[in-house]
Length: 402
Image (cartoon, rainbow, N blue to C red; front, side, top):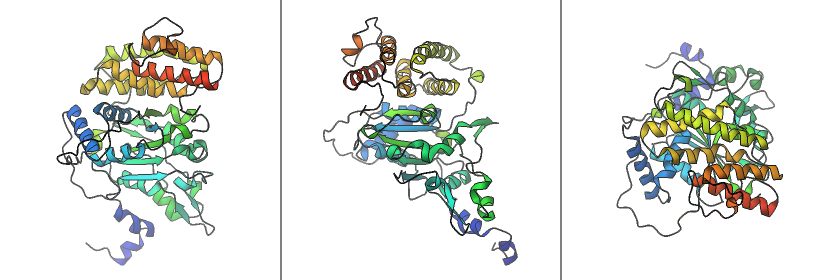
């Protein structure tokens, strides 16, 4: 029923103006029981809309979204990074039209977090940034997945505009059966604008908000923030098949699955009983690799260890890839982007990791690797590429231009 004028006066003007637009009226479909089949459906949607990829690429992306608070999608310019991100969201019923997909281009002119979070104007009114109302909408619709894409993240140094968000993400923790964070903005951000403080002051990053960044690998001017890498999985899109594909008979149906399809429902490795033996084996391998990484000051902590194990757990739980293939992806995406430097010791780290991945004892095998063979060929191939770049430039880096 219509509110009386007296009732309206009790509600802040901003709440009357904005909150009515936060609810997205959509009928959700039952969660798929066959996750592997669901991922094939998503792959079919991408390919029907002109994006060439296989089910392994979609499966890997899905597992990264389940396991990590953020996913970075990298590759050369024009390879289709933002298209991949957008079409995956669309396949799940999230798009710009219904307000559940938002792409924000990073601006070289950003000198702080105001472009994303907001600022007070000269008159003292708080002006929300590009992501704030989108986050509020996700909070108001916890059963629906929301996808926020930061396009070309390295057009400005990440620490300049994203450090506050990284700090909030770094404080993620479980409470009951949910993952929560601290508020995105402190009370001081709103100045004297009490109305905005009431409206935005308790806004957190909800677990149904999935954050993705795209990075053109050849445009990386300096190494990516270690704090960002610590909370992200880095997916490198490979060379696309440029051959024309036959037109599909019909575009697959969009599947409006709820956020449960992507949300993580385990919060501590100590409580996991399924696939326990596999998790112990993975941690043993990671411990050995960590000893090697420490020689380049690139060692991982408990957060990265846990996210790799979550990735492997869901892969095994849903029967998606072999354990070796999944671990190959996880190691490549969570460990290798951390390695950088210009010393022979750093190159030795590449060689020692390569020996494990390629199953060899030869120090020089990394220089002649064909891209096949060994337990983790994807990781071995990337290590070989990084070593080749070191021999050309004198610097070890995950990124193409170094």
